[in-house]
Length: 534
Image (cartoon, rainbow, N blue to C red; front, top):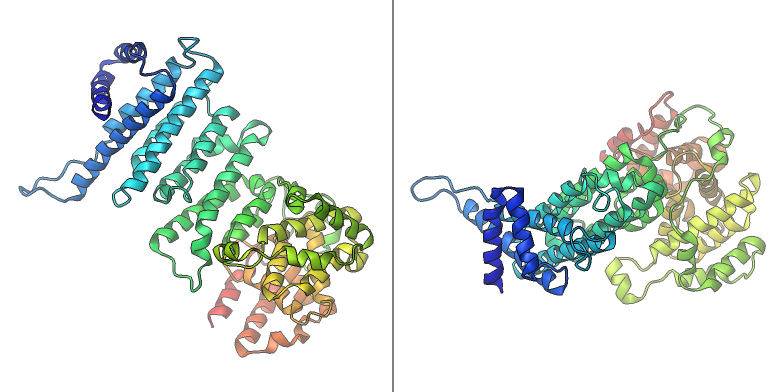
């Protein structure tokens, strides 16, 4: 069958140069021969054809990489002719065949089903080649096939239009099946397709933000692939992983600059997927703020955060936090709600601490003993309930803060670190959540509930987010400035600020940076880095 398919592909390559009429006649001949019915047999034919087209390109790459010929002639460049021919054939197939029972253009459902078969066939061929020939697999040919389809779908069409949610969902599903955890050799091409200038704006500009969830799933899939590589200690990144990390960083930078509302809405899910040690990447997500907002200068003397009009508004959290808190058990959420109302059951903090521990096998894979996403969801949910209850001077005595304090006391140092990071993830642009969690962290610093190391751990969580390169979240800066400048918290009387000359110089540099009038947002980073270098 491979020989027969190879003959069909060669014949199509010749017909493709003879104009639209000849192309349509050839496709009709294939239909009459029963080869393009958009059934299982068609899927197999397309998969083999995709493999042959990719093999043609791979062989050209091998010849080009072998160097000059013995006579000194330059080797021919790798050709995408077979790849382009195959992609053009699939485009005509979907646009002319559609639902076989309807003939001609077919119904909407039929054309989408045929499109799904085409993309699945290409994806299966890609996965098989990556597994069978990992030494020579680059994925460029399959990326080009999908890129040609994206270009075709950018043209207005009643059915096959990339602006339609059905088409976006099909393409997202295809990419999710080819995500780097499933096909590592396709990682670079996969990221190129996710960030494609044809796809990305349409996902983000889709009606009712339907494409936002798809993009969140794609970005989280890429970040979860990176996570094991970035959690290893000591951290020694291979060049391949470092390149992919920089690519993800640039995609987030594009989103921060052009589509900050997406990062604002999906910050919870993205922070779950970003490894704990990737502080700058997390700062990129948390620094986003709506384009209609003008950020107050966090270095303004005597800044009254609680008087800002934005503090009265809760941010949009496009994540099902309540469902994550339930974790399949509605009784857990009911117990949390009961505790936040009446501080009962009293055993809840202990039960939650136990529930955060992962099974040994999963803990080994995640490089941590704790269920960090569950902890992040619980902290956010507690804060959302606390905001609805009001954030005034009584916040330190509220059930929500007491619950966080008791959980912190029941966790080991690693668990407390993750708990405090979950709270710091909410220190973003001016909104009610930022104000609440800023008050919560400052309250825990002032009243650690018998945990002597809690103020030091809070300082560490805040400080390590400031000593990386910009940007720095607005709420993070406001909270840290309040902590070191307000004498109520007695920051400079803490023993850990004077435990070593290097630490002492670091905090002195922080104080000088924060005391400077008119400093720009994020400007504290450079002096901190200089102090850290010393």
